Image (cartoon, rainbow, N blue to C red; front, side, top):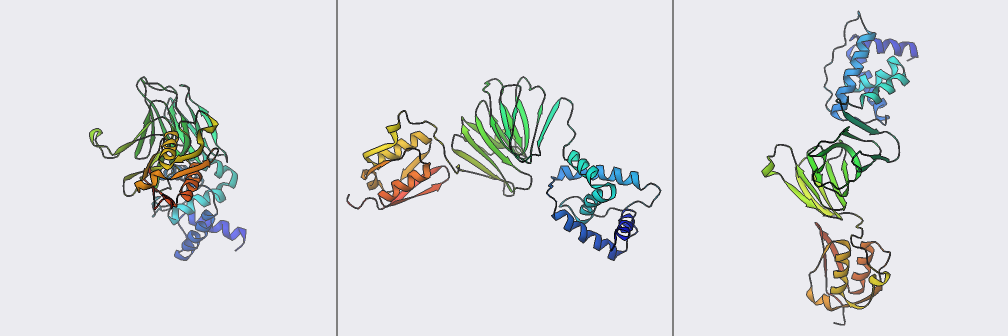
Length: 336
């Protein structure tokens, strides 16, 4: 098919004059084009794009029989894929791409700031209250130009790290889908992508309250309090909250001296007590006889799980992560 025939087929499709075979061919072709696109849209964004495309289609097809839409936007059906793809071909690639990018940014209400990170690297945003946000690529935040007198409220789509300025009189609230994260002053990360099946909140410093909002009364909300090195995962389908440890725990209470993590003839009980205080994590030794085993080693400048590997190997033990607690089990040292 040459370019002239292809252009005529597009015109027939837009005016509803395609045969069933031609319409099927257009759907298959547009789906292939869409698969190669790097753009991704939420349901709300698709609706906004649809309205904009229809306005442009109608403006270029006056006097022709209108195109009949028989498919919904939910799930990005074949007809919707055709519209998105034809937008680039019918009106020219560059203007269409600009239109789609603009459509991805919902119209902000008066007094609202919308920030979208369409670059390939994280973007730092400083808020008027002194808090700051590191917005990850393909993410967006929305917040008022001036925070209210009682709360500081912000909405997030995607992923961001927050460092919140402490203000006991105005809690800092982040809304992400069906979850609300509320703090007074702390730092934490939220991952809440539309295409993901879960929302994740992880705490670096301070305490964070995370709770559900959809269909729940204030006195019956399912929620948790998170502390440093803890995270929560909310499954959007099962509507469950699962607490756990972050993948790379950081020191919450750094050792006062460099020799604090150098252990010489120290019992395992003392070693785990020291690590627990430093990381703010509970360690449970299941076999109590193991507490009397002795450990010698320098654990400075090592990640927590590497430290655990060395300790457990020395006393013939293993560890397991269960929720927000680390369990140590095994027979223990052979010479006890």
